[in-house]
Every structure is written in C-alpha cells, then in structure tokens.
Image (cartoon, rainbow, N blue to C red; front, side, top):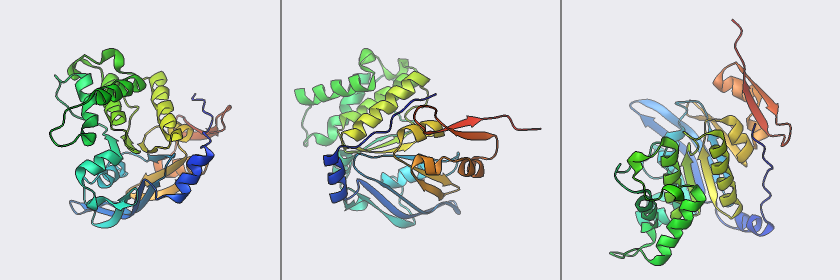
Length: 280
C-alpha cells in the first residue's frame, strides 16, 4: 500500500496562485471524431503548485483531452488558455517554454542516446541557430538525475526497458523547465517502488510551484498523490474535487462496474481501491 502525507503548499506559493491565472484552463471542450462524440462540455483547470489527476476507464476521453490542451487537436467547441493566454495565440516555441508533455507512447529513434534525447528539452530556450551552452547540458544532467536515468545516460533508447524509456522521456520534460507538466501515464511499465519515486518527484515539482495534469489509471495512486481528481466517463466529467470526494465506492462502481471496494488508507486516510472477485 502507498503511504502518503498530503502536501501543504507554502503560503507564498498559495498567495501567488490566487493572484495569477491558472497554468491551464480548459472550458466547454467538445470533440467529435468520425461522427462520434468523444468529449462533451469538459472543463479542467490546473493551478500553480497543484497536481490534478485525470482518471477514467479506457475510452473515457483522457488522451483526447490531452491532445486538445496541447494544441494537437482542435475541438469543435471550447477554449483553452495557458497561463492566461489563449492556446491558439501562442507560438509553438513559447508554448514549449510553458508546457512540457510526456505522452503515453512517446517516440524517438531507437539509436538516439538518452543524453541526446534529454538535451532536446532545452531547444525551446535556444535562439535561432544557437547551440546548447554549458548551462543547457547542466540542466539536462540534473533532469536525468531527478528522473533516475543518469546511470544509463549514454545508452541507446532501443536498448532500454519500457520503464527506463519512460524515465528518459520524463527527464526530457524536466529539462524544459516548463511551469506546466502534462503527464500521460508516467508510471506505466514501472514497478511499485519506481512508481512511488516518480510520483514523489511529481509532488516535489508541484511543491516548487509547478502545475501538473496527471493521467493515471491507478485510482489509489491518483488519490494518494493528487490534490484534485477529475473523473471522466464516456467523454463527460462525472465527478471533480478532492480525492476523498471523487474516489468513492459510489463513483468507482458507477463508472468501472462492480468488483471493487474503496477503503481509507490506515496511515494517510487517502482512498484505496481494492479489487474483489465478483460473485458468480
């Protein structure tokens, strides 16, 4: 079981968050693909110093929403703002300075070294035709250490396990030094200990003032590490709020079906989702 003590945001960070626009604000998002409605009037916001979990079953629309808020997919209706500016008004380089993304299945050449991949995260900060400075390489090295991939920095991506590749792409996102991180299943292919390490890093980044939108399948991890949880089902927001308000037996059974029990963690009190066998 995951033990987690909820973070208390510093007073200065709380005051700053209250006086500035959210890092991400998406409202009224409606998406239709192939004649089917994928998202219907979805709203999600991420403030500074906040980890927001986006949860829901397969096909709920989580990855589609991520494509919308990164500008990869234009919705039929709705608005997206990043740090107070309309998404469509931001040049790609400026957007990359504000938002770092780790896709669920990121791609890169198999022969690329981990170190070279991570240094790519510095490109939004470079001028036209400029080369990386010593500072850029230092930032990349620090990102690899934080993500736990510095020990295989000189290996090719094609030689890595799925979990090692995941750490490398997380390090690239950290190297961008963007205030908003969008993470699609960052703990997939990782063992339980590594999952906790990555999510502790996410909590650390948020404590430092970053905002994180975290797509995660594991409801127990979402409840342990997120300040707020948004539950999607069939393209609609079913519930939104504190983990204790969203990860409940009522909501989980309604969206995922029977066969689960939600209990408070004995140490932290955070909701823990326990599967149980269905009666025949």
